[in-house]
Image 1 (cartoon, helix red, strand yellow):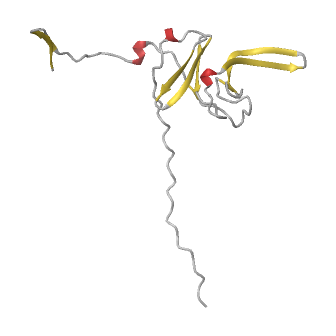
Image 2 (cartoon, helix red, strand yellow):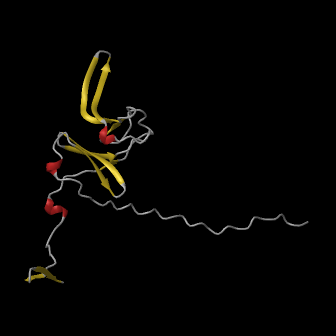
Length: 160
């Protein structure tokens, strides 16, 4: 009796190495003077539109699109939380740290990006923000390209 046919042996599959964590680049998006407390600004970094907020001197940044129908969160109302441990006992907390989408009212925590509608599955991407001293952003020595300039018969000529 003939032996049953065997499936051809598969070559061992390579287990993909854990991809190295993507290196995040820092981008200067505003001066501190442009972003006083209470300010907000829509910035574009690469192809991403990011909503930047200054809430009482603390900065927050989230992707500027509500996952529901892509409303601009930068145009949303900033609100806080009303918390309660028991009926009739209410307190206001985290003022202006929740952004409400201007289109349909979905709410997101600016610190974590989590949705107030469904925190376990809906969120917007938060981005780390820092205030950096100008000298820390770019260090010298700086070197400018220099050209000789002279005037000939009312023409300005640059020698390159």
